[in-house]
Image (tube, rainbow, N blue to C red; front, side, top):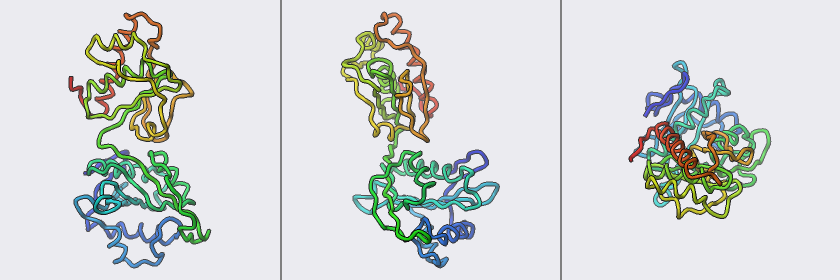
Length: 305
């Protein structure tokens, strides 16, 4: 698998790439502020640790202008009953920092983890003083789920904590629809997406101030086209919904709408169907369907109905 962005090419590494990866590994480890490898680790031992080549374990790199500027590995976090969760590590050449290389390779490897069937990704020891890495991982949907005190001997700061970070991965893209009451627009959008995509997309909806029940006009308009939402209940969106979403679509909730750094966000300007006549709600329904179809196409999916 290979992917390219603006002048950055990401791909799986081969054994022939090690000579270009080793200088990055050596420099990053020698700094003593991010990885627990011995600062004076030898090349052969480093290669054994970093270069992986198995069905569900591999080493990756990013190239810019023909130069290897970052590398990563991906593997199961645990064997046996723990092999459904991935573990990964990244190193960026100090000369390439600040160019977006780390983020580009991170997104590539996360997509690769999904492709290989991992349902989550766990980092076992993110050094607490590494603010840049923590910020990147949080912007990509990872959360700190635990902290081990004094777990890392920092070259200049002594004993510092290390975080365990985790993100759930879905083999399917996940979309969160949010409005104010979760009683009309967001429920209609979620209904359309489930109807048109089937089980190819994970769908969530929620409200910033959930109402007591769905708007009856919204339920009726959707039923006219064979999309049943009568059994749904308004609910508040949760932080778990936001972290899990690949796309967040907001509809009129203003500052109360969730925004998660690094997650794709769309804002749909739609008439609130509350207290609107059925003819108006039908127009909202049809516009939502059109936008959902565009959203599906952007996810490289087509409507199945």
